[in-house]
Image 1 (cartoon, rainbow, N blue to C red):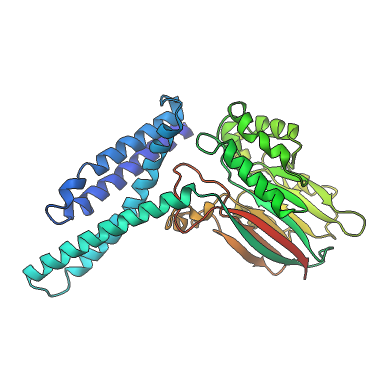
Image 2 (image 1 turned 90 degrees about the horizontal axis):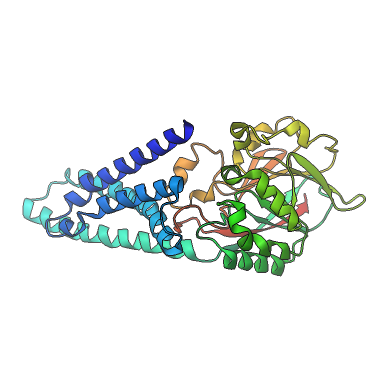
Length: 374
């Protein structure tokens, strides 16, 4: 029932967006300009429906190009909706300016052409940023009582290996990770976006990560088989932390690495987050670095030591200004934040992308984090 509701809401939302694009943007373009784009909303809506139906039935051909095109319709719908809102507000405001009709028509024609140029630039930049390889984002974090002057880790998150992100991408991020020579690597969820049995070949290069590597579940692992994901990653030498912790380092130079499962586990009734279990036997006199896929888990840490939480999930919004909607569900969007006097959180923009290969003002990243004593 929940899935049917999701599908219905998706189709209704896409329909309303495309209707708005037509009525408040394309239809209002100066005569002779808008007529060339009249079919755009209908084409986008057909692509949106094809994408969501394929997610249920798999009716589209097993073709990377076909899937990329279908998924891109969603991103284009959102981006043109943003353009339509800007256009609508601008035109509405301009009507209050006292121009004569001839001058107003000339200004509107120039404005329409400018908006179309900006719309194409917005879409083009989104495509270019979406398909490029992730940047290296270097962050320094000072932690109270941290037992090392300098300890480095690489965070990979939201890679979304599946229909469009394949082995070559995984090989690249593994090579970049090894080049950074971190002390440990953490993968903070949404590594997979397809049944693991169908992407084992694509995930296999992860075995070549040279540093000790830890993994936690994200919401997409629950969509495609959390148990299967965990089992396969174990064969690659990656250690899952399923409401568990490990001591990193030796002797007096140890700190706790705590891994929490995703909140989706509560809905799936499989491996829900369990803080009591995760901290069982944990010496909280030592510094604690916590892995949790969704940033909102930081709000559940009041009774547990959490010097630094590492999260993903948000993609930094992926396509600006979608991040404004993300922030309605998550307390933090991207970057390093001081949550309380004793707790910080870093939220990665993600290493891959979900859905359309589009990003705007939210580039993908491999996070290279240096931990130091404060």
